[in-house]
Every structure is written in structure tokens, then in C-alpha cells.
Length: 86
Image 1 (cartoon, rainbow, N blue to C red):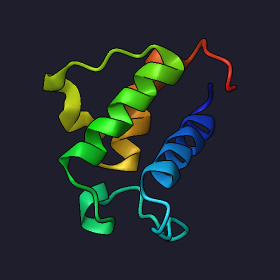
Image 2 (cartoon, rainbow, N blue to C red):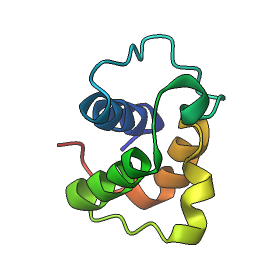
Image 3 (cartoon, rainbow, N blue to C red):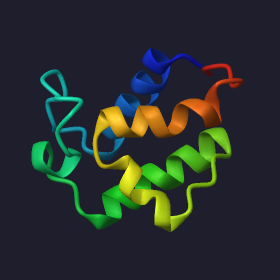
């Protein structure tokens, strides 16, 4: 997957987790929690959905890499580079 495809996947997951949020103005450099009303369970839902859809194992010590859209895409790119978008 390309970086843009990964960004789309993360946006789809965020849309499912927080359907009432307007993600059209999402700033890729700002923390998700500063822009959306996400709690720790929502964050874990993101991690679990990535695991379910793409079999990506994200260790707890790497959660800090999933704070912004930009850092999430950068972190996931090497893991998903050989994966086709569903």
C-alpha cells in the first residue's frame, strides 16, 4: 500500500470508531486526541482494527507512533508496503 492508501485506511477506521466526527479538516500533524473526542478505548479499537484487517501487530511500546495521522502513516508504511488494499 502507498502512504495515501494507508491514510485512507486509517480514516476509514476513524470514521467507524467516531462516526459523528468531521474528519474533512483533519490536520495530519496534530494529535488525534486534540482534534477528535477519542478515549483510550477508541485508540485501542484503532489498534485492534489494524490487527484484524491487516494482521499488524503493534506492541504497546509503539503506541506513541500512532499519535498523529502523519506518524501513524510513517509507522505503518514499512509494515503494509506489500499489502494490497482490500
